[in-house]
Amino acid sequence: MSSQKKLNGTVIVTYRCNARCTMCSRYKAPSRPEEEISLETIRKLPPMYFTNITGGEPFIREDLEEIVAELKKKSDRIVISTNGFFTDRILKLTEKFPDIGIRISIEGSEKNNNAIRGLDDGYRRGYETLKKLRERGMKDVGFGMTVQDCNAPDLVPLYKLSDEMCMEFATASLHNSFYFVENKNVIHDRPMVAKNFEDLVNELLNSKSPKKWFRAYFNHGLINYIYGQKRLLPCDMAFDTFFIDPYGDVMPCNGTKDKKVMGNLNTQSWDELWNSEQADRVRDFVRHCDRNCWMIGSVSPAMQKYIFKPAFWVARHKLKFWTKKKYSMYELKCCRDYRDGKLTKEMCDKCSTCDMTSVAKDGRDGHNSGE
Image (cartoon, rainbow, N blue to C red; front, top):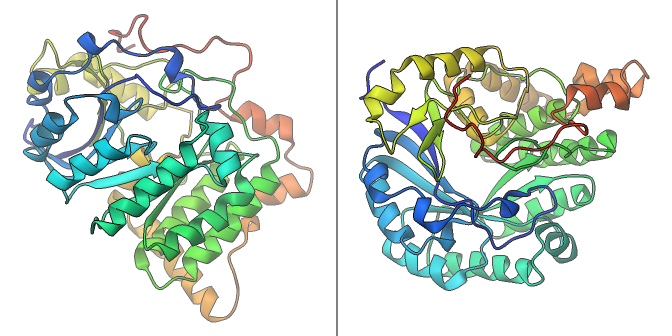
């Protein structure tokens, strides 16, 4: 594989976080400032089509401006994921780099958001940051929501708010992995959560935006995921997409139970790392991975690579809309089987990434192993 191949990358600049999210315990296992990825290591990264900067909370890094400046030399597009709490820092950075994207996590209503995020003033701070970014002319701005039982009814109202503000709207559901330092996240009332996703899918399909039509397909996949079913598209993480964590470890993704490391960019060149035997062992693991994650970091590249399947789905459902037939979650066999008693909650739980009996790992112990 050529080191000159353009990739999609996610740079986890810190594991420090000011939030105390109910579905993520990363704040309990923060990185130390002195061990976090340096500008020297960032300069070793390959050319990228797209780079997501995330954490932890990335705006805790005091040198984030320098990090963005370096990544702009490498990447065609940059989006930073944040909880939006540090308004002044975000406004200052986007004033210097107005062409980057900002995604702020808003978990539904003010009450639900603050309870889920563990930030008493989190909703107001995040929402005010979004408004100020839009007022300043920022174009690539949007919400991000992790859907679970307690906030699923807020899904469509939050989408409509984002639509009124002419902002992007990204969704996810509960996952378990070393990255979240969690293994007990699980959806309890799957039909209720799925129905709210179904309503969102119909809102997206009813829009005039082709981008939103494809977002509908992504949310269709989230329904499939929460029932513990096989991914709708192949996973090519570690082949054309990578993650790098604060310790310089390059990984296929952030969805594995234990951290899978292809190499360490602090001590290796990119070419040496990407073409190593250890990297190939990780790729073999990815090819046999059974976690069936459905997160935007792995699905977006797959939707572009295997465009015919989502494109056919979009075309078919737009035709249905013209005949006044809406999308139904019961198009998925798993939803029909659950409704008809052929698939039980216990069976879905076993197929999920939830494991109530194990201890969640944080990616520190044995993190140099690619096995």
